[in-house]
Image (tube, rainbow, N blue to C red; front, side):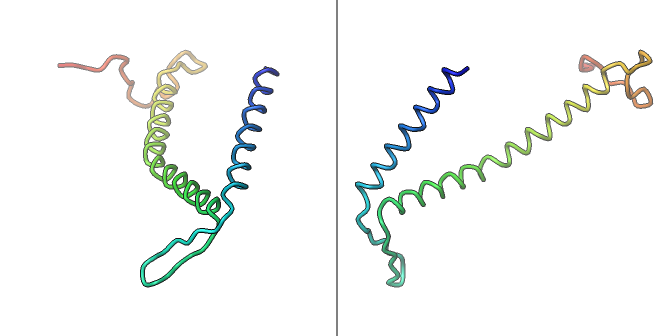
Length: 107
């Protein structure tokens, strides 16, 4: 476990050094031009960082519907499992409810 933690530390240190060197080499200002003669002048590294962060945020937002759907499905399956597991008296936990068959019924 300690070896894996050390390897992770080395990898993250290498990533930090590469990003730091990238920032040092790309500190000259660039001009980003918008419509209506609007312009924004900023260091290149800041522009790249903002673009990366915006892409990461949009990627997370794009994943949210699938994540919510998976959570709902997991909750539904957990409830179904609770119905199938026997309670302390040996009968299913939700004995007042209709029994859920183990195998789907096919006519």
